[in-house]
Length: 93
Image (cartoon, helix red, strand yellow):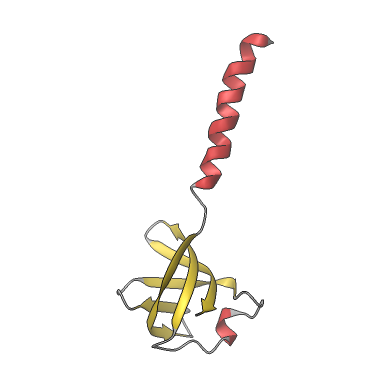
């Protein structure tokens, strides 16, 4: 049993560490455009984010109900999914 303790510990620590890679990134910036039908938010640097279906702000208001528009300064919490970026929360600044 002791022979398995170290390998199992290493495997568990690697598995726990992989969850940290999925942690949300934070971006502060200005909205260039917002397309409500496609839920696409383009920031001033040209980067596009898709608002998640459950996207909310700090007051639990759905992102689609926030009245997002060009020129607003926001803080995005987002994660990368392959080539796309998905915003899980948007807060007006």
